Amino acid sequence: MQGSRISIKESDGRRGMAEALTHVGKGWFPANSAVLNLVRGRMRDGSYEGQVSLLFSDLKKDLSLFTFCLKQVGKVIDGPVKHRSPAEILGSLEVEKIAEIISLAESSLGLHSIDPTQKAQVMRLRHSIVSSSTAEVLAEKAKLDSNHAFLLATVRQFGLNLVAWNYPRIYAKALVSAGKGEGELEELLFKTLGYSPLELGVKSSLDWCHHADTRAVLFSDDFAGGLGNDSQVTQQAEKYREFCEAGELLAKLHDPEFFPKAAARWQGVSQGIERLLGPTALQVIQSRAEQQGSSYLNLLPGALRLDCSPETALRDALGNLSQRLFEQNGYAVKCPTLFAEQFRSVYRHIAPGQPSPAAIKALVEVVIPSLGFVRGCVYLVDQKKVQAVPMLRIGDATIDRYRSLSCGDSGKAAHPVVEALSYSAPIIQEDVFLNGDQVTHVTGVFGNEEKLGVLYLEMSPSLRTSDRQQTILYFKAIRETLNDSLNMRA
Image 1 (cartoon, one colour):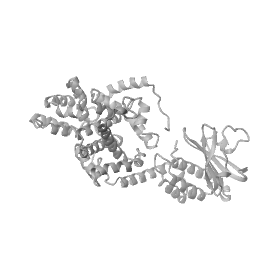
Image 2 (cartoon, rainbow, N blue to C red):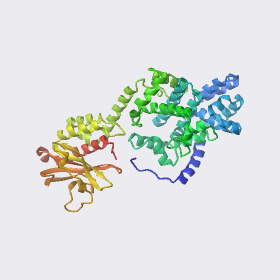
Image 3 (tube, rainbow, N blue to C red):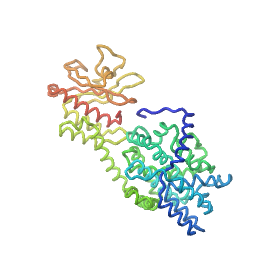
Image 4 (cartoon, one colour):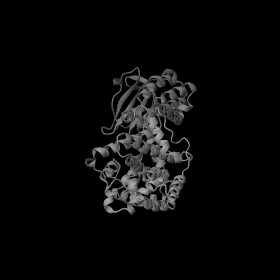
């Protein structure tokens, strides 16, 4: 992974978890007062008598209230019951006990509120609703317990909600890093906090649960704190987990700016969804998400809308993202209009979070020659061999024209590619003998802490006589575009 991280020992992580449980236990995440009032009113008029399924359905309309009830259930049931499915327990609990929990919720869930301007939190809430609705619909079609699927999907997202509202800056920073391809969101939060959001969510809501399949689905994740055991996962539990992951991926697909790797996994997952739900699968999921999230629609108009053609949504989102990436390349933006448009066209090929061969091809074959660089080479540094290795030739020369260079060859006679590793600014040399020719070149480093390279470019006769400031501008624009095309932005 790229970027600096906070290293936390396991013991520190355990202490951090204890403190976090106390902190998020007080803050939770925003409840929807409309649902709380609905449930309280139906409690008073007896609507839930003999209608436990109606009560369960109402609780699902507010994920904060739903998870709060899960937490409190463990305090009102006996030990042996805790080995049953938590959805089954909640669905069969006496209305009087639920009423006690609701009364407690009224005084416990008021610290945070839903703010439509807080995009990271709104997105997290949307992902939770889409994930749980998807898992629920898929379980119904597979003739599994849809309430259990909804519960599992909700709890898998619960920890992320807790972090988003109770540690908003940490969450927002990790979200941006995930968008840059530095790792999955859960992984980045695990590295920063010392514990996983999944574990935080489970411990906050279902720490009392001893149901084997539930624990298998929730604790067999890579970042679940090592509490899982894949050998204990039954075929049914594996199905529930598959449905949860499908919902999580569908939610991420609509936000490629922050989840760039979702698109690569979508085709295989979408085929599984369509096998169960048919060709109108996404419309079915959309309808269920709007039903489950109906209480949020007034607070967050349009936030739950799914594009029934994810490919269209993805194309539009990637187009917006490529434009933002281009605008962040301040050197390319400052180039003359013709060249700036050429750079913009390269960025249209860039897919976030991964190298983009089409972008690299356009940069090397179109943009670099247009700017007046006739030949060159992209070197990557092999850290183990301590060598700069030629990886991509530019112009009419073959790759054999360039050789691997020892990065230890420093001193007065150092090759400019090696010398460039010691400087942050590009270096220019005029009329020097390199690679069998007399050349004028500009050379500089690119990449980040984990991956480092050197860009070497030889100038055409016309570029040699041009203003050096302009040459450096062109070089820096190319270097930034190369960083983005290779997913090596610092």
